Image 1 (cartoon, rainbow, N blue to C red):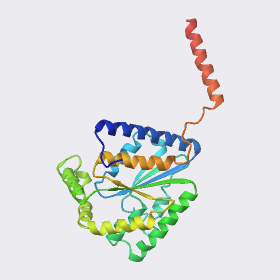
Image 2: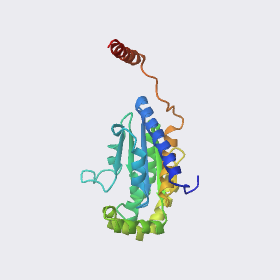
Image 3: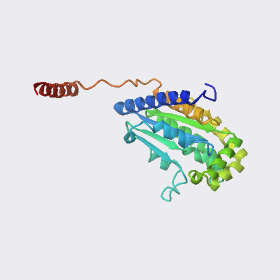
Image 4: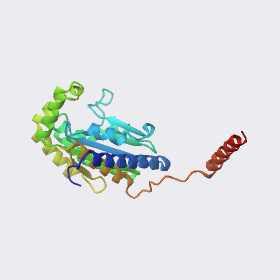
Length: 258
């Protein structure tokens, strides 16, 4: 698929198909007691929130949880950085989506020197072990990174600055990250090199075109969650079917008599 879509009609068709597939996946995971995790990373203003919103739009909210990850809470500070993610892992039959994730240790904490060099260098192996443990325990994990160019990021910052309904999205930290672009780019490349494993590979999404990025990311996530899994709806319980048919047939007979 090219990094652009022909028109809005193509985008809407693909979006609806992927949303329906994600709903089917959610139902299959619920019935089988499976667990799924989506880790979403990317540059500021790359469209992470918009993609997540469309990914979850048709899902049953009881079976999916979106975790927006910011700085550690007071109760989380002083603990191992993975602690707060352990407490957010999905229950059987549910899916957890992390809007930013445990990769903050090797990105923002590395660049802003919030973690020592020894700590963030050690984190690559810790993260790989963490993900391997989840996968070995039956969790399906999808990791996507939304990439925009610095020029596109500045364009989106300007749009947010001049839109009163989007100004809240623009923070001082976003500006600082843009100024530190080269440092973050180096950290991101190291992250891919050290943590894109056979068991848990990264999928990098070109995100200058929002429609394309949403579709490509959702394709990567649904493909990862459906691979090797029967996502067809389970047959109805015969007892439930017989009881429902008796009830419906009884109502029809009553109406016919009237």
